[in-house]
Amino acid sequence: MSSSTKSTIIDLTHPLDPDRITIYPGDHNFSCCPTSTVARDGYSVHSLSLGTHTGTHIDAPSHFILNGATIDQIPLDALISRPAIVVDLTYKKAGTKILWDDDLAKYESKMKEGTMLLLYTGWSAHWATPAYMKYPYLDRDAAERIISTGLKIIGSDTLSPDEIDGPEGYGVHLAILGAGGLIVENMTNLKALVELEAEVRWITGTCIWMEAP
Image 1 (spheres, one colour):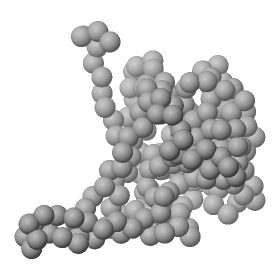
Image 2 (cartoon, one colour; image 1 turned 60 degrees about the vertical axis):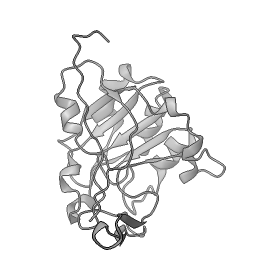
Image 3 (cartoon, one colour; image 1 turned 45 degrees about the vertical axis):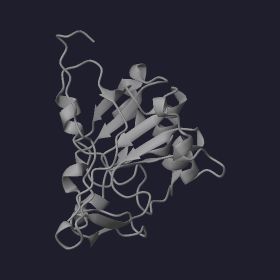
């Protein structure tokens, strides 16, 4: 990178705030409670309780695939400095399918091993509201077409790439994770990536952003 090149760091994660969060139905609630305070004890410590799929996170194959790779078995270089294809799907309505022919085929030439696909629906604006539970979701056939290109990482700004309690079950998860892929859920700020003029957008896995009282 030349000295004249400018870079912008954009956080794509939701903060974990017990008072403003969406939890997948049936998952463990999130809590963050002080156990020690500076005023009382001279130091600050908090107790955390949460499910492993709380907030912005990555699904490893083991989430659905017996003997699939766990998140600690994913090489770090698989999560660092990946060129991303950001697909603007903000025209999709709640509860509608994201289809290959209608929505994704035009990006096929850019899909290849080593890149990641980010589905920008705009649904992060509904985070921590009832509307967040009804979102555009990926069609299983579309997921299989994406994986067939060699692309292995798919992210979205929705609760899941699958419809909640839909007739296809967890078909998208099974298609992606079954092929050794990764799924990033509950992303935010994807609009900022769409607005960047750069040809290539580099995405790096980051830590949790947590708000403690």
